[in-house]
Image 1 (spheres, one colour):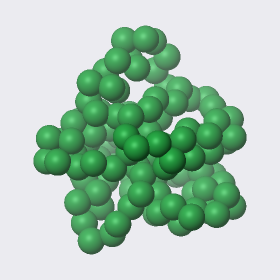
Image 2: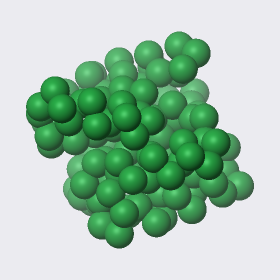
Image 3: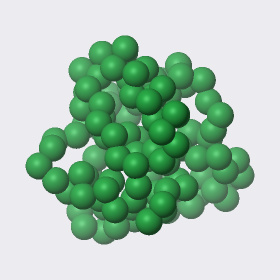
Image 4: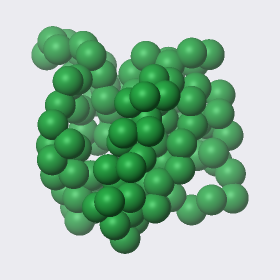
Length: 122
């Protein structure tokens, strides 16, 4: 079981993903915007992975990831995005994300990416 921080501003999608991750045996916590994400990523909670949406209010997911890495954050980051170009994937990588998953996606695709990041030394 992993402790997952899900950062998603769409509450319907967030609730679906939280339910799914819990169904798959993980503990999941939610943040709805960039500032809240950074607060939780650097807080007292010990997460195993961050699932981070690109388009967030306050601070974008790319900037959240970039700031997290600049301050020494080492958790695996899976970036979720509605963007679908190869340059968008490159932007995610440059910001420090380990993996990129384009929306819309199947819940099993999310599961595979999360499990991959949990088992591979990133």
